[in-house]
Length: 268
Ligand SMILES: NC(=O)c1ccc[n+]([C@@H]2O[C@H](COP(=O)([O-])OP(=O)(O)OC[C@H]3O[C@@H](n4cnc5c(N)ncnc54)[C@H](OP(=O)(O)O)[C@@H]3O)[C@@H](O)[C@H]2O)c1
Image (tube, rainbow, N blue to C red):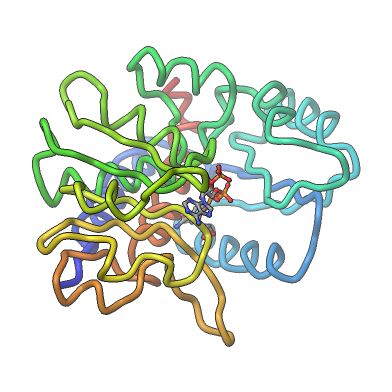
């Protein structure tokens, strides 16, 4: 069975509508692009469509000096939110963003302040994809005491999802696995909930899961021009699986847009 995330997205849209009604201006999002390659530009085109749909003024800026441009837009009163397109290259790292983006405009939730707050169980802006993962799980089941296995330990998905899921009140028991994990299938078969954030097309097949597992597919991979996840679709025959496309990615976009409205309102 596939997990339907439409209602979860609808809830985010309702949050946006509430803030939108309170604002007297159109929020402005600046997307900085360090490496304008084909896939980045294609992602930004879809971001443009989303921004238009939600009523956000999106400016895409090609950046030759990421740190300087972050500081410039941090100070610009007309910019409410900042997004940095990946990949970074040109010598910049995720830590450069984390250290230099204003936490109040950090709609991706990657600044040291916002990550630190999350660590202390205060959720301000939190990494959008990790929030999407948690929201989908919470809308589908009670995570309290459940065994959640995450494949992937990235700063933007695996690690924050692990912190969020083990938060007091959510109370999941979380295992984070990665490329050096031994006997991965033995680990994943113990999962009540499996999160796949690997970046390898159809990596997780039926042999990784026990029947009835809730499987959250974060992966976005292009194979022969088609977008596929990290989980083989036939896993849905024995598990509850999020679709790709139309699952985590769609919710992540909605969450990012909601965060732009929150930043414009000055919620944090
Ligand atoms: N839906 C969305 O909105 C959204 C957002 C962000 C990313 N994504 C997608 O999600 C996927 C993961 O993204 P990411 O940024 O987290 O990727 P990443 O930074 O490349 O991290 C991948 C993780 O997978 C682990 N891994 C790689 N090969 C493995 C293997 N054979 N066995 C076990 N673990 C393995 C890596 O382990 P090591 O740490 O040991 O290298 C790493 O921790 C990608 O497909 C990406 O496009 C989707």
